Length: 466
Image (cartoon, rainbow, N blue to C red; front, top):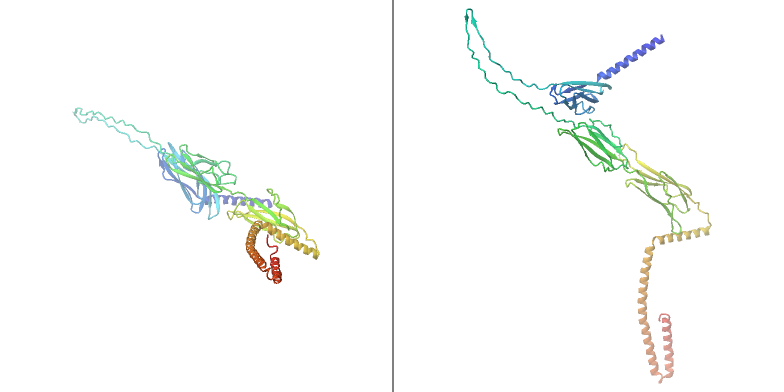
């Protein structure tokens, strides 16, 4: 019984599956119609491929004894597409279409096909009919009447005409048979009925080679754009196809060149010691290496001088862990972030890690602290002098110039006082000489007084004269 039940279930499921497949196929409707049912040899007519308004699909087309302007139609955004077909010389033109068609209402999809035939009929040339004369006779019983031959022969005009051969209409096929960008991949894959493509290239590629081939040998194609100079971002290259009858069709290739990859351009790590000297700590940066160890730094350094730049100006640079360095191991992180050009892509980030060890501060006595204080003052002064050498030199020159000017003025004024003193001495000497004979004792006293005055004045001016 179990085997019978299993067989029954298998048959039931197969029946349901077949019904689903048939339903998928039957729910979709594909049709092909033509603008004419009878055409002349080489005549062009319209072919319309359509599905229902609630359906969509991609249909491949082919024709026997005729040439289609496109071998593919896209019914995704519209329910019908019209193309042209050129008939052959005789017989029947048959158009075939097949592809997957989806029904939005039933959410089913199935392979569909359709066909349409058009008769090729040569135009009918009217013919000239020629009628001739004849004779007739009539008679009655017993009587015979003979009529004279009254038929006149009129010469026929020359009715021979020369028919010019019919000119074959020019082709309106402006499609490509193939399209490629050498060494790169088109998206979507090439189809003569699809007119827009995308190509993504790396930053290292600065030029491309576009290769195309027309469907009709009497058509021509021309490139519009500059494939030999691809800039960063989107570049548009057009392939313009011109049919024999002058109609055109344009294929668009959008080539997107990536920007330069994010990288570290410059890095400088240093600090200033107690004596004002700059100590360089920058390690040798290697490609694809993002972790580095830095030399030990003195205990009195609380922050390193770090300068970073990137090859891309728009990149954002962050320095983390360089504030208030502690004794022992410290981790300093340099993060470079380049924002993405679209929301779908993630930001490009480079992270460099530097491990630096800070020495332990020595234990010192009170005297040692005083010495360290003086060392700190000396270091600060030395650092200030090192940073302001030019200002110090210029200030010293200005100060010396001012002092020299002041000393010159002082000497000039002091020289005038010296001359006045010499004049007083000469006057005193003259008076003493004049009165020496009359009042010797009084003169002696006066001379002593004058000598004391002179000695006092001389003491005041001593050391200030040449």
